Image (cartoon, rainbow, N blue to C red; front, side, top):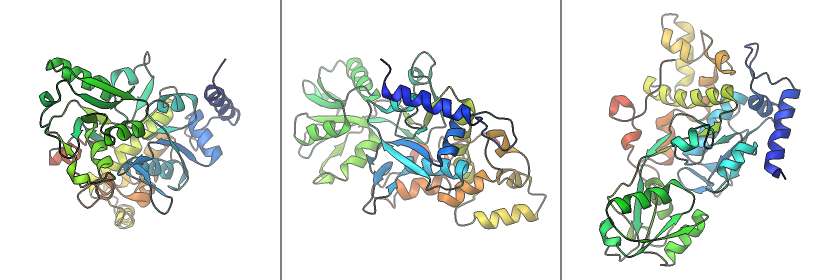
Length: 352
């Protein structure tokens, strides 16, 4: 019997095709997913929902975080309104099924870009540019004498099941010849509950996630992140690879956030920059980026001013990082590898 999610996904695809599937204003591009989103009037975005700094609900009931701002930027680009987003909280076990079935249009949920997830013979996802370069870490509770991975020999480590964290931990411990007992849990809530109940000597997952969760613990400063970095974890939004027009649109929404920071176009000055571009034909790069000339928006099935819409909604990548994860936020994370390429980081947008 087909699952309800699969039936829902097929139904949404048929509905999109029935209304023509045209995702652009005369550009000839066909995207069933973009047509569905436009007909619905909202983007459905899969997020974690319980991870401060990336996606969590504030006291006012609004979602906030870096992953949330990617959803908002995408809605602004496609629908002209960053608030036209429905959020779906997904855990590590149901996130890919929700995307494949069409339950969500976009997965913006601290998900690692890997070969098996990207490949057609694996999960068959289409990944956008990475929005947070991370690495897996290990955290120990207050009073622990553990300082290195070798100190965990013979002990138990809590880890979410079915995640890259489970495999990375096993690989690193095997490489170093350290025997340990993995305590695997289906959800992150269960993983952290077990850790806080002292069922394990440590917990292991993405370092950013450990830092985010730690701020909600009793005595947060007592929990220590070990210096060891167990893996590369490029956290990246994803769509299904069956709709390349939609995947391209999401990809270049993220690139727009990165390029706008490099060009110095902020939420505060975007109107002035737009006026400058309109008044000065010599400003070729600025005019193309902001949609004053050229057809970049049309080539993506978006409006010419899609970059302006994105920046009005929430600013460029650097602004998004600082308010959600940076030194002025509760997480107080250094940008590290998430700096622009000119500043020694890995953020680099191809030419517009």
